[in-house]
Length: 227
Image (tube, rainbow, N blue to C red; front, side):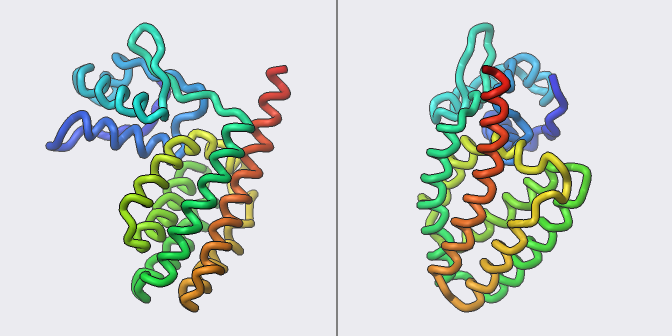
């Protein structure tokens, strides 16, 4: 099984630990569309028994994030252009709402911390590891959405990212190649400091559009190659 960066379990529910590890791997694009997950292999890589691993995988099947297959295996669904277009449209609605709400509630200290995360994200984009940029981007965006103080909305956004995350593999084919988020995130910080909900929502909406366009181009090329 390909190295996915899973860590050893802490002293807590083993099933919750596995679920957390898989959640991060999906959102950070470490599991590509079509990846097959074999329960026994995953359990061995995590250093634990099969039962909590299977329970965690079944949870993701129930939410539609993974599909179950024969021989105790699961799969990250293959993504189509149509799937990703729909995900992008939904994400724009809910993430825009989170950004607009955060613009009213966020503290000056939180804005400063968010600006530091933008800098960390930009730096990560110029490293050789694209998943580092994805981790920083996730931290940045969820810091913003958490500031909205709407836990149900935050949970909804996370579920959408679990579905979209495998497609994030296609965002950074060449480290440092993309520049659009720099302007989007600069506009976001400016909007937050100005307490301008509409502009904050617009910046996030544009960031989603930019990323969705790149993923769709990659998916379309792969679909064309597959005939």
